[in-house]
Length: 126
Image (cartoon, rainbow, N blue to C red; front, side, top):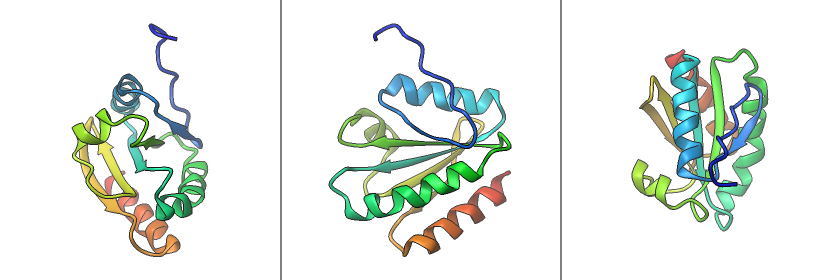
């Protein structure tokens, strides 16, 4: 409902961000918690996005120590966020640290390659 504060993101889970306020709250939480925030920008019509989603979910579920928070944004449902963040291709993963984008990954490779590259990026920014 309007006026309801966005839920806090929990480590070890993949969270869907439904509004710009959800995105902003997730970004602020990552700053407050000194955690990386990984956001998967995807669309329901994107085959590669659909293919990578369960693999990203497994990455999220493995990140249980609180140093990484994981979220997803359906670009068709929340067009303001990808527009504001400069998303032009899907799927795209952005990594934020201290409220700023520090890295990105275009999910164009095979699933395991994307997962390994995402893990490498996370390890480099911890």
